Image (tube, rainbow, N blue to C red; front, side, top):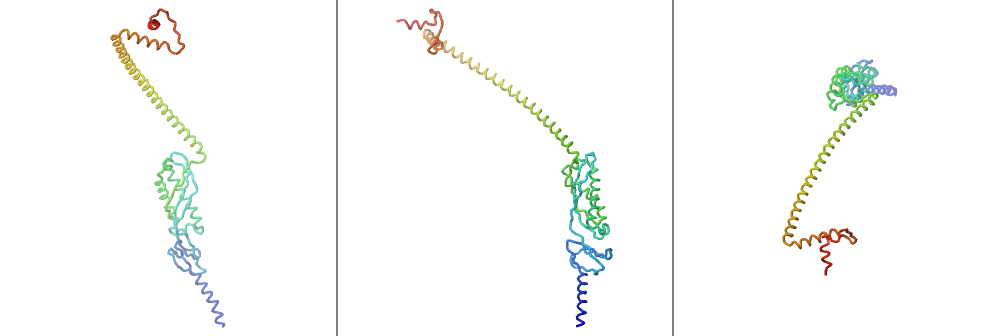
Length: 289
């Protein structure tokens, strides 16, 4: 009985000691085994690992690719046109031993603050060596690659590997927006005025050409109509001449009837003529028995 009573605490302590000496390394993590703050071992492979209870401790770090948004910073390109740049970086912890030595107990938060300073310095250096048009152009991949390459060496001293650096937004400072918008508006208004002037000039040319064409067409139509009218009059005169030559009396009678028809129109036509006028020759003949 006394043996059993003694063995139970010993077994319990042994189980606790075994459990305390075993730890699991996740496939998404890397682990450091520390003894009194000094790195004893690095566990990068997932699975079970062991440590000395109470004396050693385990610190885990994320082994995945991490993202870090950089606070917007103001840069001054070669043309002194200030810009506000918003960027982000993708990185991973490549060397956990060096990472622990560089950041100490501050961990990931301290590393990210130092990474921010590295990225900001590289961004100012690279973007300060080009013009604002190069920064604002759609092809900025080369600039982002230069920023990444410039920050790699500094980041490696922290045990970090920079995977990529991207420029999300590139804007003008707030105090420069109104002046820039006013200048852009003035340029667009000038371009619009030039387009309107060119349009009015083209319209005047088209209108003048149309007026000239109308005059030419009307003149040609009048000329053609006069020719046709002249030919018709000539044909009519020929017909009258032939008719006059065939029967002079009938021709005179026909011309008189035509004159009566044109002169005496309606029911209340009035004419003031001498009674012995030749105009009434055929009328007087009609009154005779």
